[in-house]
Picture 1 (cartoon, one colour):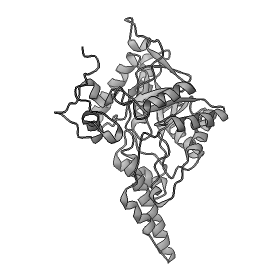
Picture 2: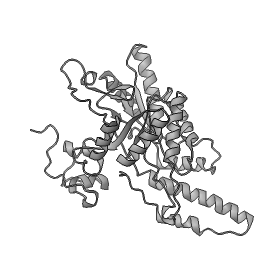
Picture 3: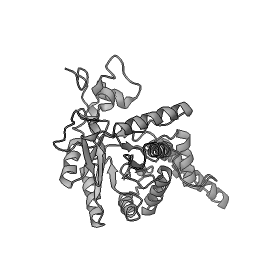
Picture 4: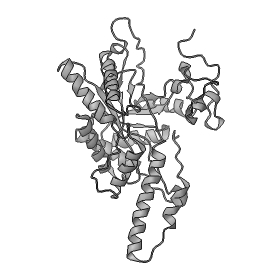
Length: 355
């Protein structure tokens, strides 16, 4: 019931092959194991999830011709009143001042249209170099302090939100931000969730509207050697603590199938904290791989499903066709099909809105 499958890279075998008898060699081996673990983990993390959100559509809601569509076509996520269409920011990684200005204009235009839900994560906007640097800091192999993943997405959103509020006034609509915690092997307990949440609050400059676990704890570099350390329940404890401390108003998960979703919901319910959301891959072309069953489980439990890739990464908007395939293998699968993943060929599927 998982949507992401991560396979440890072959070079992890170097970790278990390390042997030493002398104290100095043992120390070097320990540091080498930590370094390889960090690189191995991020070789899986960097490609695991790429998301853009679409909030659940409320039953019976219909846009009107009066004012922005987002003013009337809205949904509930926990205590939040949000537009049914959210803004994904995984590509908000500016390379210079011009990029920052362009993204700032995009943010302002979205807010003016009352599209005030923004989806980000602590590692959105990060480069491969900054991700590896964050891993090294986390395992004590860098003199720099902190374990940030190096993403700029949260800081950008925080600065844009502050500037918009200053320009529009105290009574203006406030940006609502959903961000995510990244499960990795060295984050081993509930406190790691609280610490990461507090760091996100600092970067965004405000308590979090929605804080989600980015994926199940599937990054297990030593699985093929028989060692698995799953920390999902510890992370759920951390979510509850974030709510108690006032760091997050609502909490949720991402990429959870029906089984794990029910477990998370029951666990948080015992702690007195509602599970607000589950963000999953869902579109007209991606329903039979467990997504439809997950939407059903969300409805059963009262959890808002948030869809990323709602337009099948552009396939449903005629961005790609069989004569113009994208370089990314994940995108190509939606066009030429992938029987192993249950994805039928999309050739001949008319774009949404075509008549």
